[in-house]
Image (cartoon, rainbow, N blue to C red; front, side, top):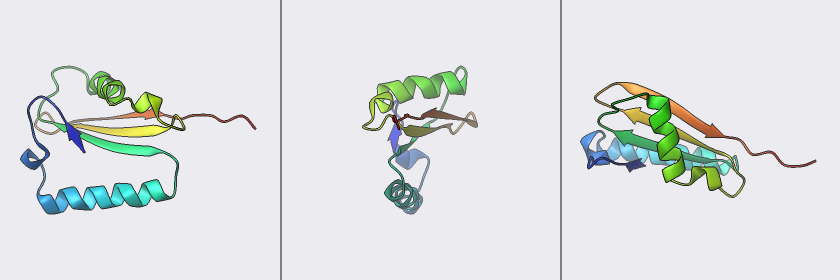
Length: 92
């Protein structure tokens, strides 16, 4: 899981909660070629989707092996949530 703006994952989740999320992501990634990430921040001053897109590009998720990834973006204090997704296509 990632975070920015000086906040730490520990500010939002217990160690047990973080491990549960990591385990769920690993389990999901075993059955797909997609890359899954969760990004937590305290605040999002603007539009959550715009911020999710910024983080998506910052983490280079638009440059994954198979060009397919999903970012769960959560601004905890502001109660904002967005998904940023890229789905690659392969030629048949």
